Length: 346
Image 1 (cartoon, rainbow, N blue to C red):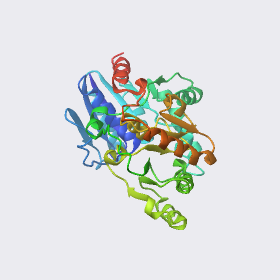
Image 2 (cartoon, helix red, strand yellow):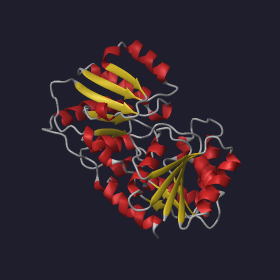
Image 3 (cartoon, rainbow, N blue to C red):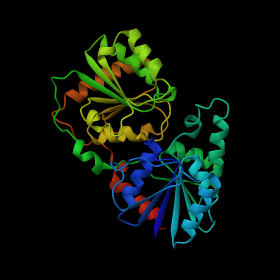
Image 4 (cartoon, helix red, strand yellow):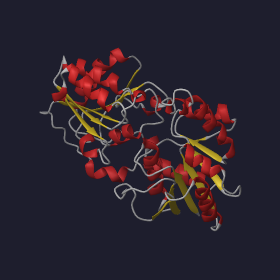
């Protein structure tokens, strides 16, 4: 059996990282081919051997469909999995005899909210075309209910997961308690991620405690964020690193991961933080409740509560003797391998 995974590009966004994780998960159990519609970058740090990578950058949309269709129909027992809208559209035009899977990676109405007028229509379209797939895969209960409501079909729930072995070399059990409390944000610098709210909360934390904030990511709010930080006079307490392919060296030294996003599927960056032993703070939206396990994750629904929660979480993190893996079992690689094998070999 061969699994063909179709992605819009190889840019290291959350959904594409999810595709890479599935490639690495399945490569020892079946042949895996990753097809990128737009381009190819150096991804050797995330995709290891045994994975065939094809770039269709030079082909127009119609020729992309013809190429993938010909590739799949020439082989026996091929399953096609697409991630993101453009890849889904290509997938539904493939030969009807090919078993097709779509992986929905978030609350689509929120994901497309950056397109003010057309966003809701695009999201609705994306939900409706799920009827053309043999299987739709979702990552949490809210996504399950959304897909079921709009497509009138029952999706398959498989929780998000990460490449755990890739992170092992970054794991640091020792907590250096002499350093000031360190917070970290990883994500696109857009309104939906709540980054401005985090900076405001962090400025209030600094009125109580000496602390530091690492911001990893890029986006349209980069300049407004810099101006806000300067206006608050807290430049010496914040580092804006921009986008980093491998943020794990910085992440593994943090005390608390904070993601005040207004919408998430299941944030990979949080899963990575938990695996590296970093307690996390998330907004109480979408499937974040399903991530909560004991005191390792704190949820909030009121921005005014975020500064106190950050102080509390930092104190809790520093009170430990050492770091340990905090990732709940249902998000583990081993648990998800069994579920994907059952789905693809069904």
